Length: 190
Image 1 (spheres, one colour):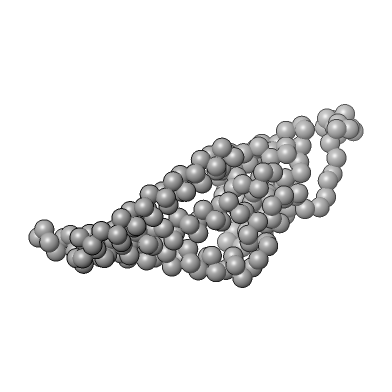
Image 2 (cartoon, helix red, strand yellow):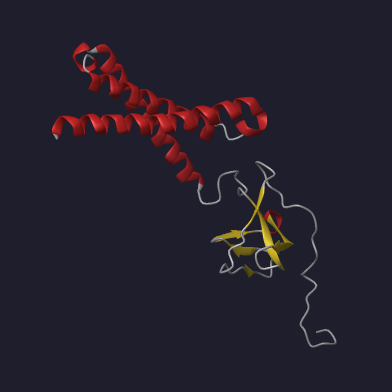
């Protein structure tokens, strides 16, 4: 105990520097006012529902302009030690990637069947479905590539930018073709 009656321990120390983020050097500050942080004697904290050891977070003074106050908040790696998003376990990440590949195989198979059989793509509904499945295949492919090659954003910025544009286009095109198909069905059944 020190002179003020506060218990001190030689196990605690001041550590300075950035957190060690394995995949990318991006950090985030969780500024939710209702969030509670638990700190443990080994230096780890429980924040955003995850345990973080002393190497994967730091405490910094953060300015809240809306309230015009300063608070000490944890600054955490945006990815955990495995390089995966903090809400994904490695098995869940692999399972979702497998499901994306599985979906892409069947979407591509459906597209091939529609292309081979002339009765299916002769009418406007079949052509719309072919466009829809093309966009779904493109979307599943780009998202799968990004999930498998997690270092894509660091290795080649122009390829990462292109993949982002293709993914954005395919999401918008998928939704648009689905709207066209829905309008066509509504028009037939009204």
